[in-house]
Length: 228
Image (cartoon, rainbow, N blue to C red; front, side, top):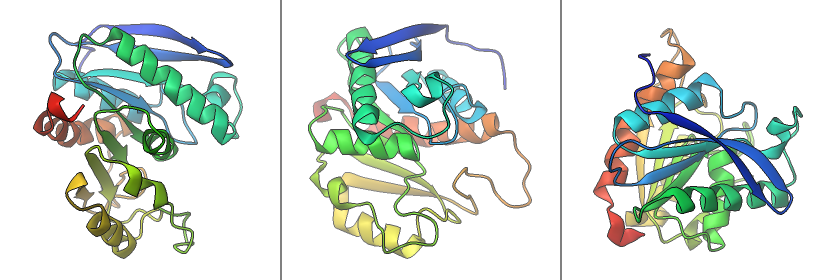
């Protein structure tokens, strides 16, 4: 990828028991800010996260990516749900404080996006959501579907999903999309797995993440401020 075109600011996000780092980048006159959380196995500095957020900046969207506490403190097991939720609320507040009236969207990779959706379902006032591989169910366990809270979300939702993602069986995902109706849009990434890697195609994780930004930016721009 090319050099960073939008300056990045490292933040200390603190609220209550939350003490984590974030990286904020704001291109000129952005139409929106997108707050992005990482997945269970990697932090905000993973090449996928870096590639995606920097490409979003190139598309004109401001971004804030952040760590959950367990990554910040060098642990491998994710935090309890309550702390994951608190961290999301603190990151959303930090992004809102830095916005200049533009809508603030939320989303993330796998776990990060799922927790965002749970907090929005319970009242966090995001303008919309962008899922980078929503974990609809554990691999091989389609009966353990994680969709109940999604139907309480009124904001627009974009699902970017690999067609070979073991966390989102295509027929189950299609059923969820039908129930969500006009609130949700699915962009299938043909042949992509949960990390959006395509068998037989060698790409750096940074490039993979960057390749999703055009879809996310277009969706955000199609749903302007009146939805906030």
